[in-house]
Length: 294
Image (cartoon, rainbow, N blue to C red; front, top):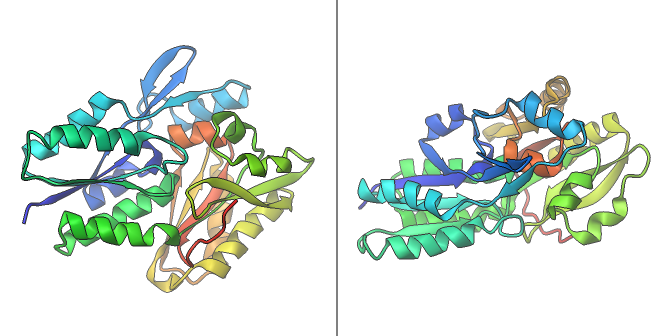
C-alpha cells in the first residue's frame, strides 16, 4: 500500500503547530489588497493578524482568490514524485471553487503517475471545521487506512462538523458572496448579532440573531453544548479574528459549561478573515448531524 499525504488549503486555518503535529500540508490561496497579490499564509508571513484586520477596520476590503493551478501542480506533484497517494480536503464548493480546480489538476497529473490515487474532497466546511476533517483524515492515515478508505470515511462525517460563529455584521460576508442571500434579511439591525453555521449543503448561513455581543457569545456556547457529541472525547476549537481577550473569555465559558477533553484557540486566517471581518469569534467541534438548510 502506498503512503498517504493529507493536504488542505488556506481556508482550513490550521496553524503550523497542528499541521506539524498531524503531518498535514496545504495549498495556498491568495489575498489581493490595493492591486497587490499575496500568498494567503496560515503562518501570517505577510500580514500579522492585527495588520490584516486593521485594514478592514479602516473600511478597506481585501479580496481573495482560489488556489492557483500552478500551486496545485507544485504541491501535488511534490508528493506524487515521493510516492504518495493524496487526499486533498478543500473548502466548501459553496464558498470556493478550489476543489474543482484541484480535481482538474489531479486528473492531468495522474497521466504521469498511473499507479497513484488522488482524492479531492469538498469538505462542506471552512475555517477550522475544514481543518478538523483534515486532522481526522491524518488520524485515519496513521491507523494504516489507505487513501480510498480515508476518502470514504471523511465524506461520511462532513456534516458532523458543528460550527457556531458570531460576527459583528454580515457586510463582509455579503460582499464576498459567502453567505446565502436568504440570510440577508438579518441586515445590521442595531445591536443584533447574527449566529452563523455551516449548513448541510456547505453554505455559510445566518440562522439566528441575538441581542448584543455578550449575548451572542453565550449563545454560541449554549448551541455547542446542545449539539456536541461525546465532548469528553474531543477538543473544542475556538477561533477569532483578532479579538484575543474575548476569545479567552469564550474559552472560560466553554470550559465551565461543557465537559470537553480540551480546548484550542487559534486565529481565523487571511482568506476566511477577509470574508467574515474583524472581531468574528466562534466554536467548532464534532456533534449532531447538521441538517439545517438556510
